[in-house]
Image (cartoon, rainbow, N blue to C red; front, top):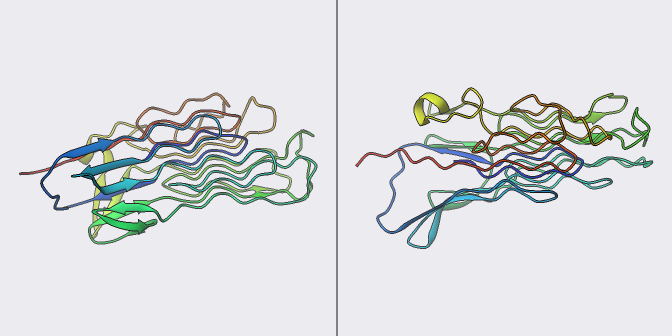
Length: 249
């Protein structure tokens, strides 16, 4: 399962956290499955969850939105990219991947791998251009949003492009076994990849750093639905998450 991808500001938006749990025993009772929505402008993605008898058993946090001008990225399943500088010499940080996911009733879980589950999430890219002015003379370029496969790219001094979004993933390795999302769980995504981070705005509200899932550099790019991917910068919308339960009686 993956949470919803965040919407963006200037920094690229983070993807939702991804949880892959194998050979789990679930209790009997009434099940409620919630799929996190993609975030809009300035908003985090929605959480995806599975509840049994009113108790949350699994929860994948939605992605964190990118920072605006002069603002840090927001934390989430994957963190949003740091915001842009505008005639300022202060650096800004990408949001972190939070440790508030839930796996089989166990709370406070951050990115980790065990013998029965894996939780994926990464930070957003930092803003490290100390000159205070971008090469275009507008906003200094912000960081990319984190993806489930890698952190969002930092923007460093003199970089002519905004930070790229962190990569998605197409598989999980649990207890030494590889679980391909497309062949094992029938996930379409982009060639089976999900959970890419958004690219940061390049300061012109026209182009961005490359999206971590699709490679698009358009500020109004809409990442594919049900991939939990963050939006590119300049106020794009993230995509919804997905919940898949593969079971045997």
